[in-house]
Length: 155
Image (cartoon, rainbow, N blue to C red; front, top):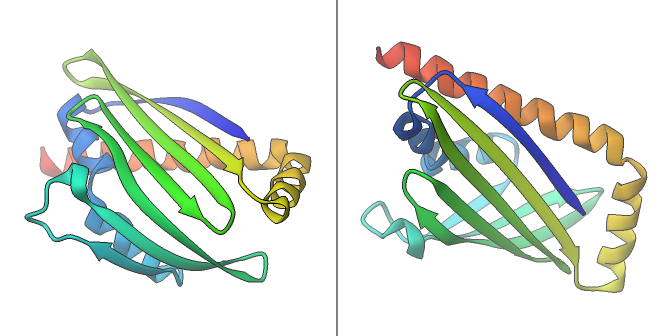
């Protein structure tokens, strides 16, 4: 299953990349939503070597996943891989400078089932594809606005 969207943000590419790679902020946000997050590595660890073990509830079942950074090319791209609970996923965030104060963010999410149970889950998600696409686009747009707000607070 594949999701993709693009958003333009009124901030320099370096600021956008800093927001995309603000891992502590994402960890805190996940914990507030009831996700158990265990980072393997600390702030002195190179970003490419960071991994996370996460446990969360989804559709009434506990899911365990391991997240790792596959590619980290500041300030252009960061790619995350997620494996576990019969699923594999890849989240890719590409940033492109449109001008010195404007950045285009392209976010791609690919989910691939590894087990029969995961295939059934993905199939049920495909039935709600339009709703999920809308939610995905909305969340990315909200994140782009958050990047802009951060930029205005700094300036």
